[in-house]
Amino acid sequence: MHESSSPAPVSRVQVVWLALALSLGAAVSLGITRFAYALLLPPMREDLGWSYTLAGGMNTINALGYLLGALATPVLLRRLAPGRLLLGGAVLATVFMGLCGFFLDAPSLLLQRLLAGVASALIFIAGGLMAARLGALDAPRSGLLLGLYYGGTGWGISLSALLVPAVLAAAPGPHAWTWAWWALALASAVATLGMVWPVRVLRRRDAAAAAAMAVVSGKTAPPAAPVGPQVFRVGDFGPALAGYAMFGVGYIGYMTFVVALLRAQGAGGGAITWFYALLGLAVVLSSRIWAGLLDRSRGGQALALLNGLLGVATVLPALTGSWPVALASGLLFGGVFLSVVASTTALVRHNLPPAQWAAGISAFTIVFAAGQIVGPTVVGWIADGPGGLARGLVFSAGALWLGALLAWRQRPLRPGGGP
Image (cartoon, rainbow, N blue to C red; front, side):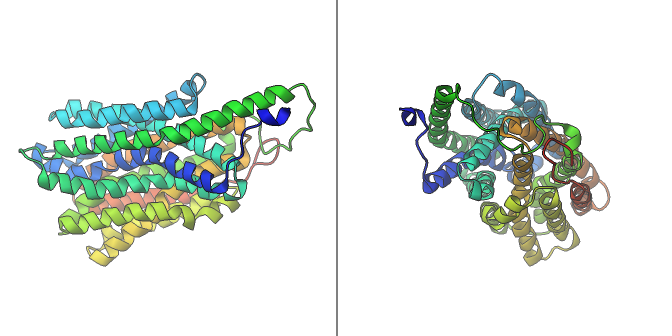
């Protein structure tokens, strides 16, 4: 009788497909809403007469919106199911992306980028929480499933790399980049529809699990062994949070300005399309490359190693204009940077009980967003001075290496709390 109340089992194949469908949230949140802007920055800057500081400010304001969304998400999750927040955020992000095509003045574009940042945080945190819960259905492959979710960003980057140049080449009128915003909004709308299936499946499982718990609530069960502290405490994760903040400072400079740097170094449109598309493909493949590391690392070692590698990838195009070196930089960067994000979710899963996952993921997202606010404007300001964009990327690499040193000090938490 009780068995009928239990949630239906999910096959290992279906779990992978659910993770891939959820990864459309990461594709919209970061791959399209944020990183497609790097492809639009050069034509918008040329058309509208922007400085590098203002161009970087567009991603700074987007990161500010992301921070506001990250602060609001824990409150919203007390009232809304993660799936509803995921889909609601995706719809809003789609609308705000489309609105960017209707404005030419900087204040209006800044407002749209701010609002898109808020929506992208709702998507990314809610989707990350659902991916972490999905990992609990197949614990031996939880690192892979998290990587598949975060690797969805790569699908968004690769799609943007193919879509934006094609639209810019075919669009009529003097402001061709406006059509690219509308095309990206359409792609986001299609991805939003693709997320409906995993949201429905996981909602049914949650409802069935709640019913099963209600049936057996009167029975005494042996207490589970504690995973770590029963309440999330910032101090317990201080080194990792500091290292992740520096990741936010460092990586966003590369993702905002690397296309502009390659153009300044003489790369053509076709080469840049290949560069960005391959970077996105490397993001997708990274879920497989680093899955074992994420499963094994219960402290800050994974975050430290990945930050260090990302610093190497960031500094390479600043040291030389060689195209093979630039391509290697993009492949290494794509193969690492979203795994840094996945490493923090894995850290939370390894050291906190499920009830505290939302608080832990939100805290890491907040410091990540705070770092992103600093990065683009500082790099843009440096780029407007002597040394240009190359010197700005050297700053980004230094921030990433500092983040690696900080994260290395993070230790696993003991049952009951404390490193």
